[in-house]
Image (tube, rainbow over all chains, first blue to last red; front, side, top):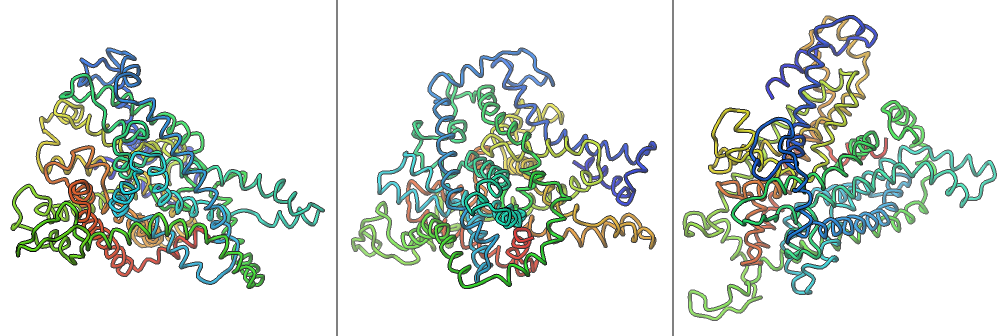
Length: 299
Length: 334
């Protein structure tokens, strides 16, 4: 980590160097390249290690060969068998994530439109409220909701896992959407009307296609945040494998010997949970980065 | 919005915005306000239902006697569950300290407060410094920038629960971290190694996010400023401290504030990585531990946590004089 720091310091003098001058060999460019390599290593090495571990035979769990050795796919087979209910958990996560995302989008899109496009008093108050909601500590919700849902007999049901997630999904959705909406060229709507389009046509053929990427990005960010949620789900699912999402299932993984933590299987499950996210994130990285930094509310 | 993104497009939008805003304001009417009310109402109502209602419920519950504690009180009177007992549970947390026997949750309250604060201070310092460094490296790098951005999103995308397990595996006594460092530390076995394990995992996961926010702040600084500073003979360090830093400060402060509020409520990482053992129990973990044995006292603790975070947020906003809403609103409105 100290190495990263020194690299960046040597990279700082580069600030004002115009791009074109970079053609020549430049020792500072080398330092900068090293900085880049260190950052990439720092970010990817633990993830790489998880992938490598997921491919190891159980007996070689703590082998420290830096590349896959004693390769097996048994871990991936094992997680879908036994009493870990991993397959079920994947389905639960998809169901919970999709329902929360759809609900948050349906409700949030209107608020975001109003914040982005309309002028009204108390806009700052609304923004502040939504921002405060997104920073709200989950633990302050989990205690009352646990009591509340247990009185209703809802612990371990889908609704007990879906409704609370709106507390962070909806603010995130409104923020990301409203930042996208403000950047949209709404003049086109007017232009389409001038060209003879009806309001419906203007919306369907002009506004919707431009808004689609923003809606899509917001949906991805919301889905990710729900997929990654742990605190609320771990308590409100009441450890019922029929509704527990993947985060809860993985944290509760047990092997054939309950005293030994089945790390290779856990890493395999981690890879299964993470790879789709990583692929989606990499495919849409530009959009996600702009959505994150514009509406940058939560990591 | 096809290039849903390039910074260039964003800047162009920003440039055109004051005029648009004026035009919009001129159009603003009472009709706007009424429409806005109806559009925002569902969101506000839903948030009131999923946040406001539970919080009020928690406060009310925390003032009542828990069913588990029903029975004869010290003076021999029967106290039934649900009776208002005022600050009983609050004083259980605040005043317990050394009075409570070792092993009770009340005994762990002040240690949990200090653990939470320690985590917050250390992780946020590391994240802000490293995040800024990363952003500076990325900002100057033209080759490999998309590779870095892709790499940086990986820790962000991995669920915290998986992150915790991944680091737990690496921090095992025979794990890769001891192998690489050539040490034999039992990371999750004693106080500070366990804390560092949590801190390192959190820094790994969140620094990239800070770097992205700072990078966005850096990218709106016009290059001409640096050119003229250079012409005026400012050294690289001077340029950094009197130009870059003040200009990214708003973005940095908002990022730091969000991180502080986020770490104060930390649960997933320590709960899974160390199980809260060896003084890594945070306020959130303690409240969840209490949940099943005495829900009302857990409600008191979660209310304490919430108020604590709220007060910290309030003080920081005052000290930093960051107007979070306005900064956010600017990005929203720009």
